[in-house]
Image (cartoon, rainbow, N blue to C red; front, side, top):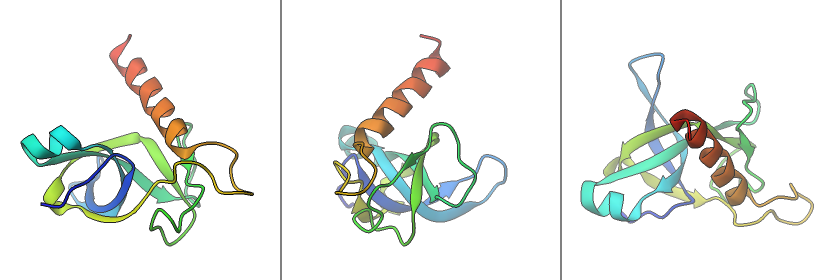
Length: 125
């Protein structure tokens, strides 16, 4: 089994909530480590084209090339899935900080904040 870390961008069969199919697409690893070692699982967030309708929690990927993405994309923080690690293929990583002349924020910090807010709201805490 390949080894993955949080912030890796992977290609996985991402499940849909509105139909019984899976489509291979990029996703952002947000939990690996012990989860992968003990159970062979990854928690991932969907990555989609920046051309799609924006959701409030979406985070633009400031450097698609470093992330292994072919086009401008966003991390869809509201779409999280549990994936078998064996089904994932690493294609890049979310940049730690934006390159010059790009978005003036840290992609990782913004994703973490949006996921934290969504979980807090969902759990009612």
